[in-house]
Length: 72
Ligand SMILES: [Zn+2]
Image (cartoon, rainbow, N blue to C red; front, side):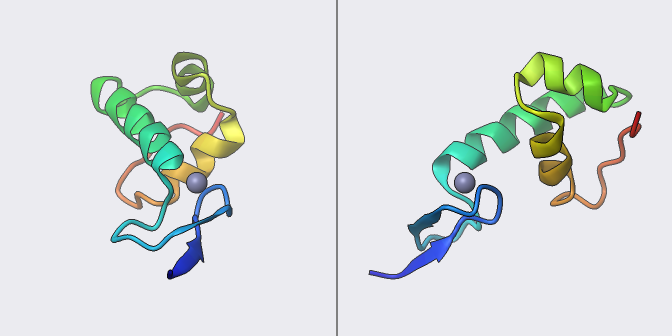
């Protein structure tokens, strides 16, 4: 079996077309959906809405170079 590490949480995962494990893909989707609905949300607001840490969100956003959010 081909294993590699999830790019977000760094846990080993089974190889798939995605760079991330299922848990992280779900979190990523949550953040993406929120940003789509609230393009001007701050990191703080996204964190509250998605219940993810700002650190995690910052990391997720770094996978989307086109996504710009306010960093305060
Ligand atoms: Zn992961």
